[in-house]
Image (cartoon, rainbow, N blue to C red; front, side, top):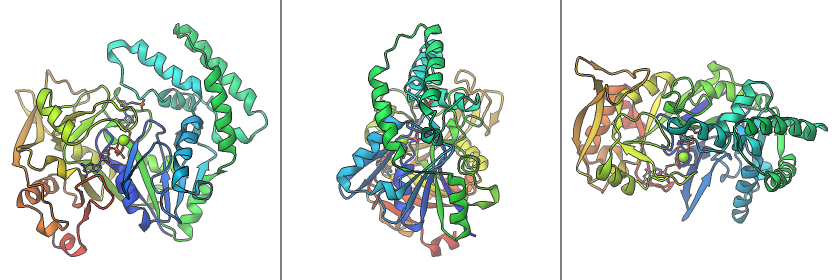
Length: 428
Ligand code: GDP
Ligand code: IMO
Ligand code: MG
């Protein structure tokens, strides 16, 4: 019996999950998404091409790998179809490589409109949602009125679609939201036809059969732990469990089947949308990181808020997820940037804490930081030959969170990835 390794983001998303899943994929036979939907934007770069995947698992470019969209995902047929079309120039045979859970929830055009209406109604306290219909679709799932991918194979699907659409229309009317979905509905039905031509099945059986036959499975997280609906900076979160436990409910695997948990983080921090961000850098300092790191959303194109690494938050995410190995991304962005800061705790004048308060209020808490010198741009592809400043930075993080960093990424391309050799991992 093999196990499911999980790779997930430890911050507010966009840590570089797509790049690393694509890099690790050849070591696995199955790559599976377990939560989220088109709010995700996972970037992969190789052979001079850049691909952004939203709903398709990041193993899709590798021959011989099965890519599963699990039951915990919310799927938008229109954007899914668009993504599949974008694969065409690369000759990817997605009908054989891709399998969709019959229990994944379907995002309707009206779910996206509800997202807009709810955000608008929140005014200044808006979440900064990607407006892809994620929240309203998970809401319908929990309210037990949603439609599942398996339902679109049933004869009464159209009637059930119309009933849910009309229910949404009544809510939109109450919000005074004017809309016309004629064009969107046309696209929706075309996309449903494409969905019907894909492999749709009860993927919980499939994945457990894979495990029983010794096949290795990599679960690909979306968003990040600080956006988790239970453990993130609520209410400024997404509507799913982004943490490792979500892989169990989002794929149908038992907790004891989980193997390694790879926790991925940027050498600094970014966030898109609203909500607390203790180490955020404003003005020119933030702009410098944004420019050097090219920090613009892969889904919405919005500029990402940028700041220093937050160790209490990282340690918290490591704890909640049971991280066994840490992967540090974007080490190149902090090279030759002057002093690099790391937040080690928060203080309110009367005392210092290193856990996350229920509500982080910038007026009440200030960050306590430690400075490190940055390293040179020339980073050899060998942990043992890293510039001493980078080794010191890595060592400090490892001693603080007590999990080894075994992968360092130094650029967006698949090849710009440095793995710690087994020998140096054992010495450490
Ligand atoms: P994901 O949502 O976690 O898959 O991350 P995104 O794709 O949204 O954002 C990560 C961005 O950083 C993408 O533009 C990647 O191409 C880029 N990236 C990933 N790793 C590195 C790295 O080590 N260095 C640099 N400079 N860019 C990277
Ligand atoms: P990946 O998988 C970064 C953020 C949104 C917003 C909040 C809620 O690429 O890391 P939602 O649309 O889910 O209702 O938005 O969560 N958000 C992300 N931020 N990366 C993501 O995905 C995100 N998915 C959602 O900006 O603040
Ligand atoms: Mg992203």
